[in-house]
Length: 154
Image 1 (spheres, helix red, strand yellow):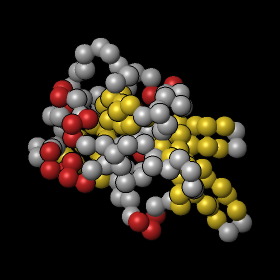
Image 2 (cartoon, rainbow, N blue to C red):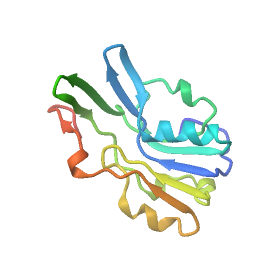
Image 3 (tube, rainbow, N blue to C red):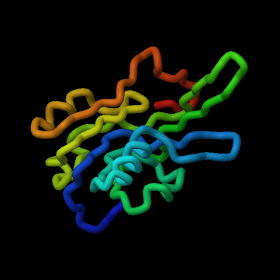
Image 4 (cartoon, one colour):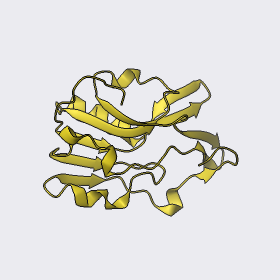
């Protein structure tokens, strides 16, 4: 948990990995969770993020948004390579899977819950734990799943 102060309830709960995106100009914060959280905050919602993040990329843009993070040494890490034939996406590392027990108690009654996987990290049965919420899902299909590079991919 990055925020050690008591957590307040949120309107919009996003569950998914904050990612480390490797770019020609250096690593950047990425992932559905970061983009959705920033958008929801801009719309005036109280936002909370549940993720597994390795503190290997700064969360500067998310300053002020509470993040409940399951500890991991390395964040989910992507590299996009642009070629004349199109984009090639490689995943260098996948952080641990997320489940309901990672969600802080005060956030379990959020009115809007967004399951935002980027690397199949969100337990599919999570949707059943929020019967009173409007639940949204970012779809990740096997055909859109990035290639994995050998080595430290979990």
